Image 1 (tube, rainbow, N blue to C red):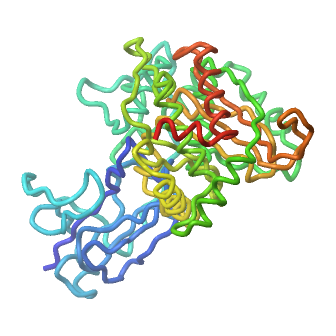
Image 2: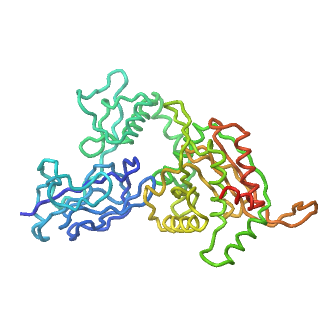
Image 3: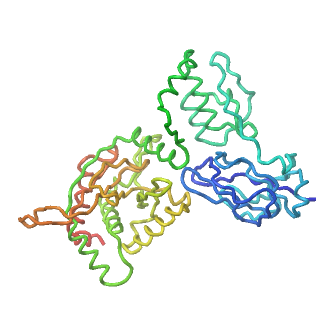
Length: 442
């Protein structure tokens, strides 16, 4: 008889607790091989194809495209060691034990230490599973329906933190997720119920009328939601300040032209600016740090993992170049190109988008001169670079047309004072105006 294996949404790493189904890559009845991608999901960090550790016939899919699932929720069931006819009648799900490759994403794979449990599920004709019910509101504060003592069904630490920070008792909630799992939507529904006043139902029409006819509502979720959360948190938590300076980049552009004319791989302007940044951070290590609020400490970081802003069809992402301080201009150019291509095709891994310690934002590619960057939380600083364009400039006492760029530097005022920030920016500008200054540190 066919053995039906249940494959759950695995831990996608980097603290991610949920993902949205973007596109199913298999249908019920399809034959899949071990480690074959079965679904494409979108997390707050990247698009990921999820491989299944079992080979066999797909007997059920759980969740429609556009559905958001928590880590640990069922994705598909696979009849292992059976033909399509056998799979149709299979009705027993067995937890992973001796089959499967184990060669899947973080937190999921073959675990030989687990005992086998069997439970009944609907046959394939019943798939996909029905959508979860709307989140239940929290009971009235005067008489909450508190669940008995025992573990609260919450997977996500972010959901626990949201409840804790807002005084929500998770035992008073009924989860809308699989097996009663409490989701973020359940806590948010409880917050809305808690904040509601008796006149709230009467005020609902006014809320609807606030949006004009034909207005489009776009959910803040996935990548867009993650960006919104991070930028809002940056503004909330970081007392930032910005300073800027115009610099004559004529000599830097001439140096780059000479490098590329000498043969070998071409060097990009962004790579030269990145090399200048790593040299400046070696002089001013205060700016390669983060603030640990829990410990009330500034943590200076030993390595420079350089993030750079990249605009894609899915929105703004910030890929990270690991150990940028150890790379040459050629190596930085190659890594920028590799990560940019992955960003444009939506193939960045979550690990490519996390762990940055300093961000370089080249908004000059959009044809603008200046900006006031928002720090990429939890980093302590960001350098913004405008377009390099011909402008009138006093050079050696005479008016001339030079290649001028505006440099904007935003920093966390908790990690340093204006003198340090000014020193960093001035050093960057000096290297841009006279690249020979950079040779002193190489």
